[in-house]
Length: 475
Ligand SMILES: Cc1cc2nc3c(=O)[nH]c(=O)nc-3n(C[C@H](O)[C@H](O)[C@H](O)COP(=O)(O)OP(=O)(O)OC[C@H]3O[C@@H](n4cnc5c(N)ncnc54)[C@H](O)[C@@H]3O)c2cc1C
Image (cartoon, rainbow, N blue to C red; front, side):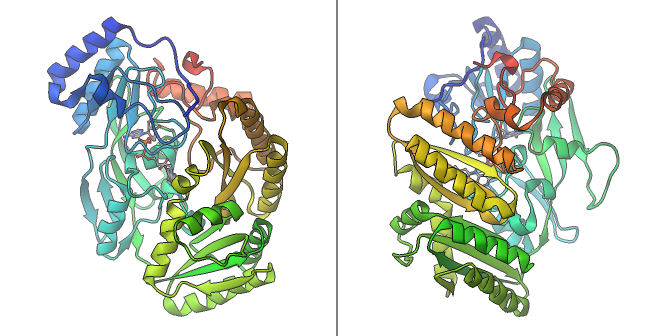
């Protein structure tokens, strides 16, 4: 971790002392962490940003705890950074200006699952994988499936509008959030959204809050829409000579109008990492697509044939079907551990999550090749090819290479915008990409969003330094 991105000035020692004493009276001492050893676990996340120690951690266990914290922090002029699982990849949960980390991971209950309405009411600290298990037991299905599903939580998923492999067919978190209980700086609390499947009353405040990276409000309850669980699954593995052939296969599959639930791409180096995880893939293969279909069994066979046809037309070396649940689980375990497995390939790794139009994946791969050649880094690409959302990873061993990294990142983002794409598909802008936002968004749009932020948080105290560089005097 080598990037120290902070906000100054930090809250004054006297303001912190006053807040500590008021919070301990209101919530009880057991819900506060104030000692450095305790604070350390709340300083960082899974991004490349250097952790920043908060002054205080509040371990919220109820909506009232959140409300009181936001009221007292506002009155004392102290920054608050909400946090759930801490698995974020853009520094969103890092308390860049110190102050309070408001930890919501302890609020981890499924309050209700309505089997008839197909909804679930959950708390923000509920781990995503636990929600999957609970609803699937009842024959229901919550599609968003971030690869961090064993340790990311719903509060963070909502704040980042998390996606995952299944977004190709089912969309992202935003498509499943009906309503939210939220709390604003100052302590004002309200339910936003609706409890019904349809509804267009008033502005789409839920749509604004989902993906707002914890900068507008803190969530204490989330009402989610569920689907019936698909009847059957089929997983195909297609190997190719190189990633360009994979991108052609994605185009062919789209042209054939097959809608798998996932189309995941692994390039040559990513495939090596998968092999190191014990996945048995043809040694000569230079890239792979993992394609998963779901639905009624009869339709699956026909869809699988057409997906296979698309791969063959694009020059696949081989297309096979995972033979059983164990083989399928093994393939997904390797895919889901890709982020950690590839971290072992170099001392430092910066992972981007750019998106391009799906027919331009080949252009993105070509840009990555050009950048690799120019800056001389080891680079690898994998991810949600069906959505045009690829994780481009920069691997390096020496901090002196960081100016080159910076120019390599800028080249990637400029190229993505030129291709009609966007800087982030699921990780958010956070601290990591705030300085690059103007490459994609014009000043009037950034100014409009800053006015929206002021409407929710006029003092600018909630999650400072995120999304907009230069706001909150970020350095
Ligand atoms: C190995 C790995 C794989 C990943 N794969 C994916 C993937 O496939 N798809 C994907 O989308 N992401 C992925 N991620 C990124 C990350 O897991 C997601 O962004 C996830 O949604 C973050 O959830 P969290 O609970 O860990 O949030 P945190 O890291 O705790 O916080 C993330 C953001 O949410 C805000 N926040 C947290 N709780 C609240 C709350 N109660 N109210 C308001 N704001 C809040 C924080 O302030 C912060 O800005 C991956 C990460 C890792 C490490």
